[in-house]
Length: 305
Length: 177
Image 1 (tube, each protein chain N blue to C red):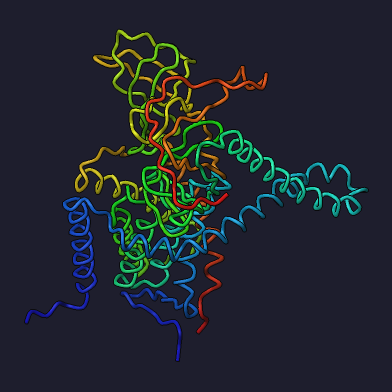
Image 2 (image 1 turned 30 degrees about the horizontal axis):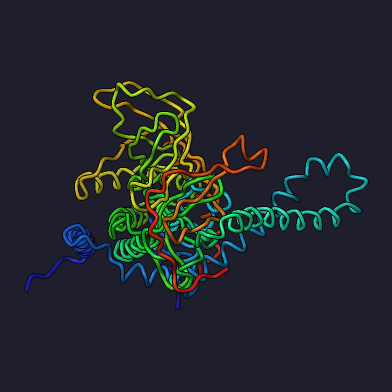
């Protein structure tokens, strides 16, 4: 047997470990499996801590935003500081709760105005652990009727789709991920094409021919052709159009704030959802969605309110 | 029994540090959880890479290449598992294995206790880490990846600054001889 000198043992171990991981990568690509069992274990183990972490960070942010960030103002009012501190802390707690209540009320209003559409509200409890992917983790899972490939939205617009479902949480691939995207349609010209992520905060609309007229500021909605998103959910606004051959390069600013998601809605069906447009929302009327593309509902067995 | 001992290389004596039981595990798990939870509420802090900082710190302190690379592998694979199915297992694992090995190898040869040395090392590792990710992306996954941009330099500097401070805090977890 060949003895490895002690000073080369760690190098040999490094080689073995790297080879093992390269083989693991190759195995996943070959079988198109991404180690689901290991991920289930990891997510299940981390999920309770992430919930705790989300709660803790929420509290810290509330105190930071409404208390410590106001220290400059407090210095100007030093004489009143002692008296005001207690009141400010109380107010900050109330403001944090009010902000959360507003956010939840927004979701609730949205749900109540679309009672015919089965959906479930969810809280974002974590984001992807690295910058290589744009995913979020939500606190709803199989028990809430969430399944893979369901659309995830906010009252502002499309967010992404469910890619992994666990017992009581799920992972959502954002539109901005390199592998994320949706079938899209320009509102004015009704030109269709896929919108995909680039790993950056903006999206890119692909395969729009050079002779199609596209203007900056034009709105995009889902086309329903991807069989995931219902039709006419806002995706974003065209911010940049560059000529190209044979296709134009179109950048899109997402309608939903994908970098600041705290609560989302999982659509448990592909029945079209009516969204208020900007002008009509001021007058309180709603835009009626025409031309239902995918009316097949997939209602869950049990849905939490 | 002493909890620290000296590596002797020529005339230099480099102290190898040990930590309270479970400290490495708790810090590594905490880094992964905080990395996943923090950007939900503080999106700008996504620039930080706590798992990488922890890998570097324990590599430099333990100064044992074998444990350094194994810790890097475990942290990297955990980060892969928590990053969603679009990131294959081994993506961060390979990069952090190499970083763990290099950090502990450098730690065994140089005194890395001075904040300036730590800043420089962290900065270097934060340039090397994404470079390795791009290598894995291009060679093993056949995906496109950018080699270098100004954001990377800014990110490396910010992480080096925060890492230098964080390392001072983590030094308190060391057992004294």
